[in-house]
Each structure stands twice: as structure tokens, then as C-alpha cells.
Image (cartoon, rainbow, N blue to C red):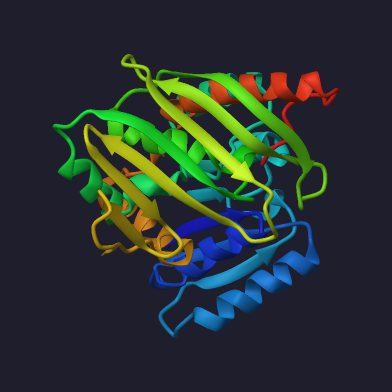
Length: 314
């Protein structure tokens, strides 16, 4: 029996659990969350999709109640909780960890957790999911011999602070480079819907890789709707991708259908890969840390200029 623990029963944790319902009874699932309301909703959503073959789900209100031997832990808490949760798990014998992003708010926590994972030989990844989606794998393969010359994400209310790392990770996946820097911003800070966190409205610009590929992230507060499109330029070819509507366009041609699965139909694939191959296609923790840190530094400075301490993003 392989034990899988999901720490955090919020929106993303619930989606992970729904995906894990696709596993067999050879697994045992544990959900840890101190909130009774969060646990009840997560169990309700699990019950909606589970079958007779699904693993049994057990609810716990504290990490101390988990089995000592864990095959995989998925840490789906908010970013300010992720570091103490990771530390609290160290009494357990853990084989693999999958972290949600944004990893941590304090850059010192990245170094400490990386040291801990290496010292305890726990293989870990971060759930920046676009690199495991077949449509993005197809994009990379199709243009692997072409040079990416620009990249932008433009839309309304899509949450720069909470989602920028996804697109930084996508740039890393497409270019195999980890070097980047932000060079300019026109940002207004807004309170997030999540209490104690903030979002950016406006524009961020930077350069990526040794060839300094220009990139930009723009999120406007036009209305209450959330929308965005990704634009990539390879030489004279402009590609526009809409994940929500599942299409891409090359040079104003007809829309091509792409498949962007929900998280509730992805996580089971991570676990199957870990069981069969002892690895998965998500971003390894050390590389993800390298991609997070310049962003955390830059965002922290923006907050500091407005009198906000730290980097309260999630």
C-alpha cells in the first residue's frame, strides 16, 4: 500500500484529490487541513468523482496524524504556510514531494528547504504544469530549431503575482535557459481575494536567457472577468495561445484546437510516473527555486516601495 498525503484542502488541493480518485486501491489517500469546512468540501468533491476502484480517503486535522511512511506528499497550502508545513513533515519517511507554487515568500527558505531535501534524499518537483501538457510539448518540438524572439502574456485580472512563475517556467521549458531579469514595471498593487495577499495590476517587462529575449506580463483591471492570451514569436511566425478556450493561432490562420486538461485530470499521471519511473515531468525543485528567486527579489522590492513588508503572494 502506497500512502499519498495532500496537505491543504483549498481549491487546488481539492483538484489534486479528484485526480487521485483515478488511482487504484493500491494507494491510500490522506487529506490534512485544520479547517473543518475545507475538509468537508474536499470530501464532498472527492465523493462526486470516486468509483468503486478509487483509493480510500482519510481526513486528518494535523500532520502528526499521518503515517510515518509516505510515498508522495502534495503540499497545496498557501505560500506563507508551505515552509513550516515542509519542516513539520520531516519526522516522516517521505519518498517524493510535489510542491504547489508560489513556493515560498522568503528567499532564505528556498535555500533551507533545498538543503533539507538533498540531505534527506527526497526527490521533489513543483507543479508548473504547462511543460507536461501535450500541446505545449508539441509546440516545443515543432519550433525546436527556431529561435524564440519575444514572449508576452496579456489580459485582464489574471493575477501576475500568483501566475507569473508559470510563464517563467514555460520560458525555461521552451528555451532551456534559467537566466532572466525584470527591467521595467508599471504596477499598481491590489489586495488579493485571499486575505493577507496582494496582486499586481499593470505591466512587467524583462529579458530571458543569454540572448535576452524580451518578455512582458500585462494584466488590466478592465472588468471582473479573468482572461489572458500568450503570444510567442519565432522569427516571422506569431503564435497566440488561449488556454481557457483551448486554441492557438499561427500567423492569423485558423484556430487550431489544443487540449488543456484540468488539474483534476493530471495529478494521477504524476503519481503513475513516480511509481513506474521514479521521476515525473514537472520542474525539479532545484530548477524551480532558481526560477523563483529573481521574481521573489523583484516583487519584494516593488512591495517595499509601497511600504509592504516581504513578498505576500501565493
